[in-house]
Amino acid sequence: MRYLITGNGGGKTTSSLGVVMRSLAHNKKVLMIQFLKWKRDTGEMLFNHPNFEIYQFGRNGWHGFNSLDEEDMNICKNAVKFIIGKTIVNKYDTIILDEINLVAYLNLLSITEIKELLDYIPEEVNVVLTGRHAPKELIALVDVANQINEVKIPKKFVCVEGIQY
Image 1: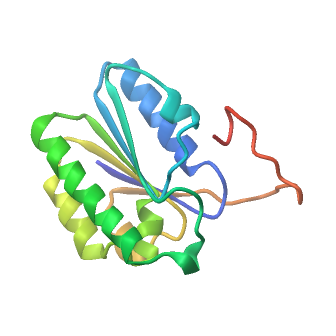
Image 2: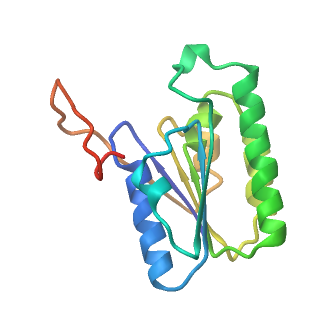
């Protein structure tokens, strides 16, 4: 199955991490690829489990949408090549493509490139796509799409270790 989590609310990556936890509890093998991310001290990067692999593909620091360039596009394309290489060598039960929706929205990867990646991944592998601004064309490629909407957030929001990262 192909799942997609989008929306302007927080918790898309966190929801996918719930899928990771459930998969690992059932002795499944999980690959998580984080696009546009670089923070090495997040809970998921610090987490260690023999059936869980996580890799980040993004420049160090947040550069903002208007500062993304060809380097970011190349990093995303390298991530796709990496995923294909990993799936040739390993059999995964679940693959998380964290922030790939945003990658599509920002045209760092085309819908065609993402579709080709999804077509390459065996059908029996569950794939979760996360990130805000999921294009309608990407939503059309999945079996299940969920939207997380922000209902309330403080004006001065402070990220909490173990919750937001």
